[in-house]
Structure formats: C-alpha cells, structure tokens
Length: 294
Image (spheres, rainbow, N blue to C red):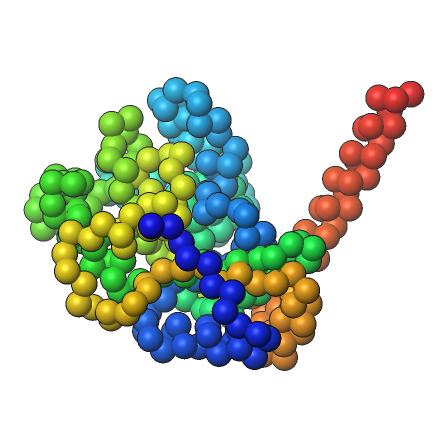
C-alpha cells in the first residue's frame, strides 16, 4: 500500500479544517511540506550520491563529508556545537548522529530528513516555492510509528538490542549499524541534540534510515502496512497519507499563514538568501553559456 493522496477539499478553509482534524484525531503527528508533489522523501545526501556505485564507496563519501565539515566549520560554530562535532573522536554512542544533526542544521548533505510537529510549518514549505506546481504535505501518526519501531527493534527483524550501550539496558548506538556495510535497513525518528532556535520555532525533528539510498516514504509506509503488533494506540482508519496543495492556492495560503505569524522570518528560514543565491547562480550560468558560444 502506498501513500494515499487526499484532494478532498473545495477551498482553503476546508484544507485548514482537514489539517486541524488530522491533529485532533492523531494527537501526535509528523508533517513534512514539499513544494512539488512529485518529489520523493529523499534525503539531501541520497539525492547527490549515485545509488549504483558500491555501497562501501557511498559510506566512505559520507564519512569524508562529516570529517570535512567538522574541519571547515570549526571557527564558525559556538562551543556547544563544537562539542557535539568533536565528540566523534570519543568512543561514545551516537556521536556521528550528533554530528549529522549539526550538519543538517547548516544545510550540509546528510542522511537525515526534516519533519515538523506543526501542520502550519509544513503548509508553509509546501506553498513557498514552485507556484506553477502542486505541493504536498506528507504526514504520519508519530505514536503508532514509534510503537512499531520499538517492537521491530526488539524482534529478529532488526535485533537492535545487540547495539545497546551498556548492553541490554542502554541506548541503541545507531552509529554501530548505520555506518556499517552490513547494517540493517531500519528507520527511526530522532530529535536534535542542540536547542537551535530555528529547530525550536519550526518544531523540527528528523527521520534517519539505517542504510543510504532508501526512500523514507517507502520505509515509513512499510512501518504502517506490515505491523508486527496489533494496533491499539490512537487507532484511526488512516495513519499516514499526503495532502495535495493546488498550485493556484499557494500565494493565498502564504498570505493567510503570514497573518498567523508564520513566514520566513518567524521560522528563521533564509528566504531572502535563497533569492540572492538564485540570482547569483542564474547570472553565472548565463555568462558561462555566453562564453561557450563565443
């Protein structure tokens, strides 16, 4: 079973009501807004790396990125961020995952995928760009997701107890499996270890997969479609789906969200920087092509 597309609303008021209904019925919900409904739930790193090359090479590329980021960013981060980055040199659980969280915050390519607990933040990101294309809000029930993940980690499906530090009672050391060539293909939800202002105002967290190259939409759908336990927590007819945002509604949606104090500045989102970078790259592209012709 794949993600069902919901287009069953007649106007923006209906859309807002449906988002509120989802929150009321599911209590704790994960949302992700994407400006183009045809985009998959791929991480920034997976969009860059060639899935056809040997897996060990892709892992090596990821490790090299972490090392390079930690070296180059040293003089630009505060002491708390630096502490998380350089814990990777210690023999502690999940130090590489902590490094990835800092990298994700600064828009470096990682295996993490951003989500939010706010339907309005997700709606903003579904509407802010590509006004000629429909956007999408992906959502799932966080409680049911976490219950199933815990059960799978206990079972032989993933056998994650072997990665606990201290053994059997400690936290799962995701580093030990995620950065191994024979690691299992699990998915879980993680929160940022550092209280970044942007993450707080966007109510953000992320999903992470045990192997590179796996689309998070498929992994999340598998969690709900192939449960190892009977569902009792927050039982509803549908616990994950997509809401399709019509392209012609995007500007009015942004206007309404601004009246709700949800816009680039309030979300600490670098909107104007994106415009500046776009114009710079467009100008470079124009002159590069002109030089080729001449």
